[in-house]
Structures are given as C-alpha cells and as structure tokens.
Image (tube, rainbow over all chains, first blue to last red; front, top):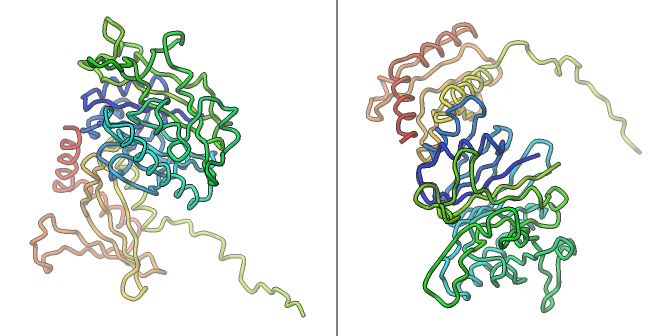
Length: 269
Length: 140
C-alpha cells in the first residue's frame, strides 16, 4: 500500500503538523503546494527516527515532493512552474505517471481562461502518456476549479467523471477524436452528508454566485490505475490527532494551519 | 545453414571480487551522510571516464536538497579503469580562486589507506564546517 498526501500549506511554517500527519498516516509520497521553506519541512519530517524522508528535486517552486523511501524515485517528464509530470517508481508497483498541480489559474479567473489552460495541460498529459507508453496516471493538486467546472470535466480538458463505471469505458469520441477519461472521486465527498468536511476550501465573497465550500484540491485517476484505488481510502483531513485544522465555526483555520485542507489517499497493490 | 553458438568465456568472469571497489566505498559513505544529517545534506558520487577512457574519475559532492539542491564538490578520486589501486584523491579547494598548484593530491595504494584518508577528509574541520553551515541554512 502506498499512501499519498497533498496539501496546499499556504506558506505556513507547519512542519510539526506535517510530521504528525506523515507519521500518523505513514505517508509515502507527500506533495506540498505553496511550500516556501522545504528545508524546514524536511528537517521537521526527519526530526524523529521513525522515518527518513527525501526532498525530491523539482524545478517548480510551487510544488515540492517528499518521499519516505529512497527506493521511491521520481523522473521528471515535464516541468512547468504550475504543474509537473513525473514517472513515479514504487517498489513492487508498475510505474505510475504522477501529475502534481498547483493553481493552474486564479480561483476567480474567467471560465474561459480556466477551460483553455486545463485543455492545454490535459494535452501535455496525453502527450507524455503516449511517450512513456502507459496511462497509469494520477493527477493530484490544487486545480482552483471545482469538479463541475468545464475545465475539469470537458473532454478536451481533464475529462474527469463522477463514476467509475463511466471512467472504466476508458475514452470517448467527441467530434471524431478520442479523449481518455479520468475518474474524479472528489464528487463523493461533497456536502454535509459525508463523514468529512463539505469541501477542501471555503470562500465567502459578497457575490451572488458564492458557493462557500469548494472542492478545488482534487485527485483524478485514469482507468488503468483504478483497480488500485478504493474510494473509502480517500479522505479530506480536518485534524492531525492533536489539533483541529478547523476553526470553531468549522471552517479551515487559515490563521493556524492553511486555508486548504489536506487530501489523503492510497494506492493498493 | 544455422551456426552453432560456441561459448569461449570462462565461468570465472561471473565471480565478483570480494573487495569493495573505490566507487562502492564512496557510494556507501554518500548514503551514510544522508542518514546522519536526516537528509538535509546528502552525498552524491558522479563517475565519468578520463584520459581517453584509461581512467575512471569519481567526484564526491555534498548536496543540500532544501537549498535548491546546492552542490558542493568535496574531492575527486581517479584510478585506472581496470585497477582500483593505486588511486589519486584530489582535494578540491574551498576557494575557487586557489591556484591549481595548491590543489592537494594524495596518492593511495590500498583499500585500507583509502578508508583512512576518507575518514580524515570527512573529519576535517573544513568539511565539518561546510556540512554544518548547509544544515543550518536548510533548516531556516
């Protein structure tokens, strides 16, 4: 079993909290966005003798990847400041293509901007998949878009759908071209009838169209990896066992931790 | 007409020498450094050929992942590609302006002396100081 944790930490010095999370959940691959002091995080992660994390080389200052095992290795296939694509080698697993994303657009960019940018990135992902010869692809990160926004679900964009059944069809034809699906399990975590929080980010602008809770931190999985993924192992975390990441009113506590909540998930062999 | 495959190689070529090669010793020490500094400073060994493939040239670097993977060249080792000893250790000057003639070269003729000299290099005040400064900056 390999455990992944993604968190946009909003440039907060929360190494001790991250260490607690990493130890508690035995995180193997830790992906952080808005992490200005990766050294402090590395020092905190390795301050106990329980595990030895490695900070992986990345040309993106927005995305930092730490791995718990020296045998988990990354080979970069595409690097931009806002997203990276790498081949992730984990012992006893087939190679995985990991796409880590941070804020492709501003949260309040126009739908057109989000759509075109998502389509551009999605095309690069398809190109890399063609080059490496497989589509065992996992996309994780802060997309600054909700699952129901066109940049996330449109065929030429991320093309992520809300059910496994549809995703397992692998691809569909639109205007004569085939587009591969992603499965987007975040749909199942929306709202207040789930065990976890209603989303990963809270906004309260004085706008008619304010949604309040947003699911902008997401995990998208290609059908070829779906046999390794279980929905019940995907969680939005609200505490590390010692302290809550939520304020008294139940919203992400940006003054202490981050305005985003961390997302935890696993891949099973 | 099919040709018959004839194997003229002796079986003994598959038997590996019991001694550790210089590069294996260097890699081992590079790996240990990461464990001792909790991965704030890692060792890295890069190997290339030199003198028209006659020599193997290993460079030992200190890497600080948290400082944008800052790379500090500590020393170099060179030996004939097919003989491990004698080998030459070249201490790289801390100050890049140091003239070439002041670069220290140490001749080593055995594994035992190689290990002893590596121990001296790692314990050297300058080496320890560099590692400590890299750790301190990584944590800030």
